[in-house]
Image (cartoon, rainbow, N blue to C red; front, side):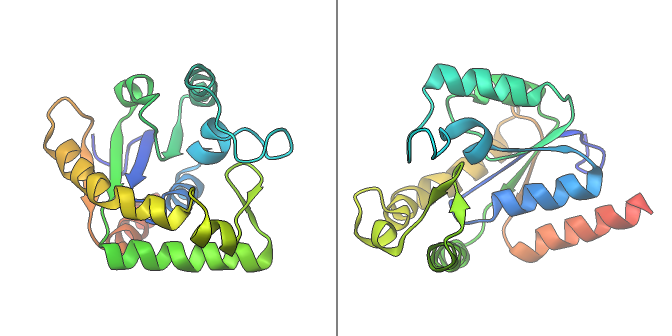
Length: 186
């Protein structure tokens, strides 16, 4: 299936690649339900338990519930639910941007959220102290995972058992894809 006609899309990529933003933009253009994995599946609401993950069983139940709409764009898909999500996925868009791009975007996003008090991860708030000094630093997480996440994208693209994978290596490629899809909608 081509990406333009897909009705169940997963957007994967390295931390900081812009998966949530890309999913919102694609969903708005195509009138699809957005599933933001961090907000809708992974994190317990901050009002209930700050910076706490749902259990794997809860994540599985939550992702099934989110997918009931039948047509959706999912921003990220964690390993605990890929066996549920991927068999129903038409297309995967993999944002495989360079480390300079993803770390730069992550740095800007984290500083902006920290300074403006914006929420993420189901109502949690990032802080510069947590981002830099904590053992749970988002920057440390990026450093620990960016190589494996990029390799994952290449592996997924080559795997014939996976849904079709559109691996994008530069941000303008997603912008071009969105622009072309918008022209097709006219």
